[in-house]
Length: 159
Image (cartoon, rainbow, N blue to C red):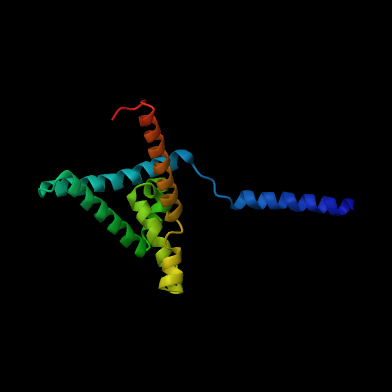
C-alpha cells in the first residue's frame, strides 16, 4: 500500500512537471501592446473608410453603415483565406473585440463545418461562437431596458 501511494505521488510530481513544461508562458505587457496595436490598426482602417465615404458626400449614418459592411466583409474574407486566425493569434483581444472579430466568430464555424452539409454543418454550427454573444447581448439589452422603464415609472428618469 505504501509503495503504491509513493508511486502515485511520484507520478503526480512528474505530471505537474510535464504540465509546467508544456503550458505556454505569456508576457502580459507585450500581449497588451499587441492587442492595442491590432485594435488600433482595425480602428484606423475603419476611420479611413469613414473619411473616404464622407469625402464621397455620404451622410454620417450611411458612411458608418458602409464602414461596418466593408469591415465585416474584409473579416470574413480574411477568415476564409485563413489569415484572420493568424491576426488573432498575434493581436489577441485587439482583433477579437471589434466588429471584425464578431464576423470572424460567425464565419469560422461556418467554414469549419461546411463538409457536414448546409443544414447539419453550416446551419447548426454557424452561431457556435457568436450565439452566446447574441443571446446575452439581447438579454442584457432587455434587462437594461426594463430597468430604464421602471426608473421612468418611478420618476427617477425624465424623458
